[in-house]
Length: 331
Image (cartoon, rainbow, N blue to C red; front, side):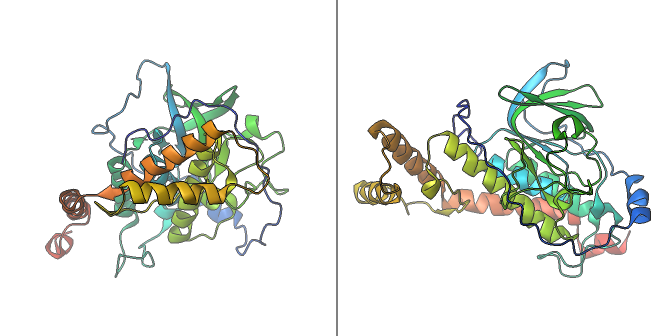
């Protein structure tokens, strides 16, 4: 699932302007509380075991997606883009709203609650497992390039990325050069986006509390997933997909569900039915999309052996970070 599924070197990216119908903010902007949270930092994450071509000589490394922020929204976005085969780096050293929570009690799957630090550790492990590079680096600057963006960190690392997802909460100082009054709302509190997290700057997305999403971890994670899906959709459009077929669904099926001549004929028919009436797509483009759709669906299959292995891996990671009742009683 983590191999390159797309050729992301095409640059005929369509510009999508954000919708302006924003819901009214449900929470008061508490300046004193935010100031207190700005002075709190998370422990650095250990990225020593992550596999990547991440350079340490100060030269730029190229990624398809760079996510700024290692909270629920950023990690969720990164998981979806990495699982879609996009080279993804998550730069995760900064301030997180989750760290201010005494106990995270309302996140689905953790009855009784989970310690916020443990929750973030699990999230980072999950992101690494799905192919993200997770780095404990503080982003200081994001600038535009002809083919994307350059991200520079306080530690001197330089990352070039075709797309950037801004998912930090209180650390948005790296965006002013890009902003020029175009992406923040009139109060300069939140970044304005469309339904998929796209901003007025092509290739720049935003997720989580930076976009006025409700201050709940599970909502931020869902928003990050939505943004990740939007990124993949836009990659599909760059590859020649038309809007009616560009959506991406991360859905795994048992091995053997797809394949065979009858299945291929069914996919061809479905792709053809999605072509807009009156569209004049050339035959090569349509055939390329057909082949890509088939390849992606075949890659969504999972063998019983692989399914069991991944379940075991998940249990091992949970046990490592969450522990057992005996472990908790000894804290």
